[in-house]
Image (cartoon, rainbow, N blue to C red; front, side, top):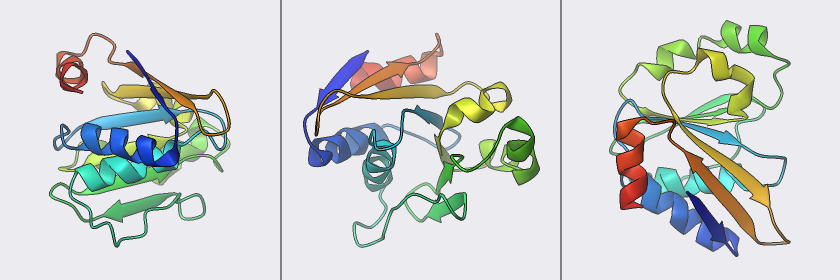
Length: 150
């Protein structure tokens, strides 16, 4: 499934629609080049999960992991600065993957082999404000159901 947005506001709205359909234990892997809109989509997902719009939702590039309070805890990872799988393994991310929150992982390709079933969102820049979001559920019934309702 692919969806095109034409502004950051549309990307936030798309994320909010997705966030409203997520539940504890869901894992979302975000893939895309710098500036493609991964963090903007995360912002919308967090809002859809009930995070306060007053809370600053930004890339955790320097801290690697941020938690946002919502109806379900939101764990936001940014693996950009990590060199590879060994660096990821040292973070202990696995503890979060089986927790009672939703995991949103930017640069998820760096830990693909460690991930349980997850919903992958590949983001491509199609213009100054235009983004293409390609969703892949890998035959996971839970995520297929989420996408059908999107």
